[in-house]
Length: 296
Image (cartoon, rainbow, N blue to C red; front, top):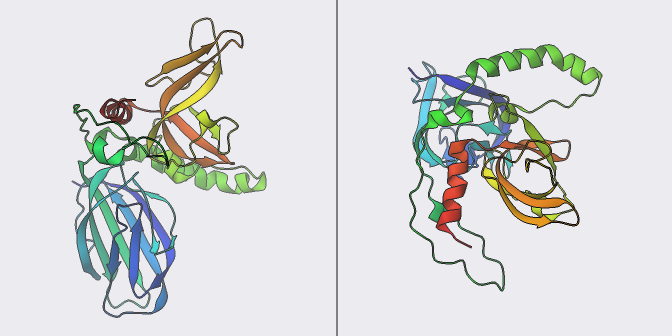
């Protein structure tokens, strides 16, 4: 039986009865032709399921069924300039089923978007191709290497329904206290991407050193990150982080420091910093595959 993982309700501005899915490849657009309105405010329900859900029930009219590919698993609904909240539908670079409904005959304009994962579509030749810099040589010819294939259930985005409910309940109790003391709370996407509460760490969004730069990365994706660290006697990082896919590239003997890299998963932004955790094995497998595919 299909299980509802997450739900979001929001008010969105709609032009010409059209809503786009931002965060999916090619930004697919969905339209209700009866009636067509120039502009209106609609109540939009987004739902993430672990399998194809049953129909929403009487009173809802199907507009379209489609298959889409999510870039990081985090999408936003809205008109062409976006406007919706971040919503985690599942793992990155998966094909998803989507059914779009509108409420028939109601006094208010209401939409329903329901997403569920179908299959892993990761391809290092397409999704993690190295960027070409102006004036530089083109990337080398790719190697043929085994491509990891995962199931949706392996990913953090599909786990922790009970934890998510308890966290939501706790947040509801703590919200007034947090507002009183101006405490910043972790956003729902960040919580859902780390249901097992693995240790996390923060990276400045405007770092002094280029090796820390994650400014072109998105929540839900996994990436290799570099940083300088203080050298320790046992060779372990001082803070215990950056362990997945760890490589020590340079040793600064005089400065007693090392330039190391590891694979992290982006959880989101917090107080001007990126919050990340060490990547899980299936997340790191994609990055390692891309590094083997595109040598150098």
